Amino acid sequence: MQDQVRAAVVGAGSIGAGMDRPDAPVPLTHAGGYAATGFSLVAFVDTDPAARSHGKQWGCPVFADFDEMMRVNVKSALYGMQVVLPHFKARGSGHIVNVSSMLGRVPFAPFRSAYSAAKHALNALTASLRLELRDAFPGIHVSTVSPGVVATDFGLAALGGGPDSRALAMAQPAAEVAEVIAGIIEAPRADVYTRPGMREMVVRYFAAEDMAAAEAAPPFAPTRP
Image (tube, rainbow, N blue to C red; front, side, top):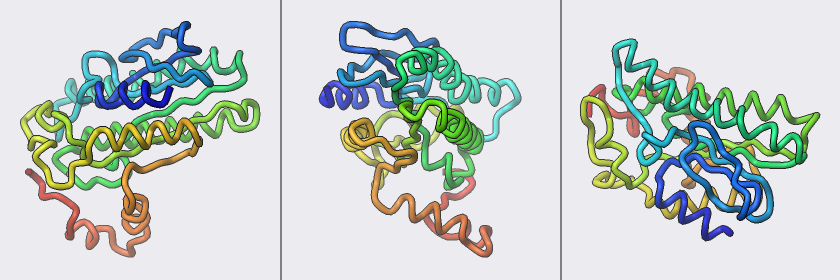
């Protein structure tokens, strides 16, 4: 089962998937596929099929582009959660895993401002759903996974251009991200980062007496790549 999850994540990059049991898929509106889990009803809800291999990311777009950014990165996840949640409630168990981004925690790359804003919104929706379900449905887990740069063609998909993520020294292999997601299914946690030290980076940023001073130093990127 875990091998199927890993293969789905590696093959799709950012995926949307769900399955009640290996022979009975639950359709998720705006989700990008299915991943068999075998032991519980699990939904990975991220981007819609048109964007599932690399998501959508823009810097400072016109209003139409910003709306599209929110549709792909936020509304598609919301729609997926709305579709799968009744199945989870009826069963009394399940696990929603939303794939966010480090940019959804800290705006390391200002030229990805709209993408960062969308992932911040996704984080808030995920946490709010978890709190909403906590008392009445303790068997339903809701998690956020935050990768950094992943070695896919994600960067090349950006409107206005951008660096190839695979060429960046800090890019994490997709297989490592898959291992983290598989691990969160085996041992559910609310909020997970895909590399050691990421959580500490987030904590340092929000604990800084002057965020502007923190933003003037690496790993914050320049205004444009």
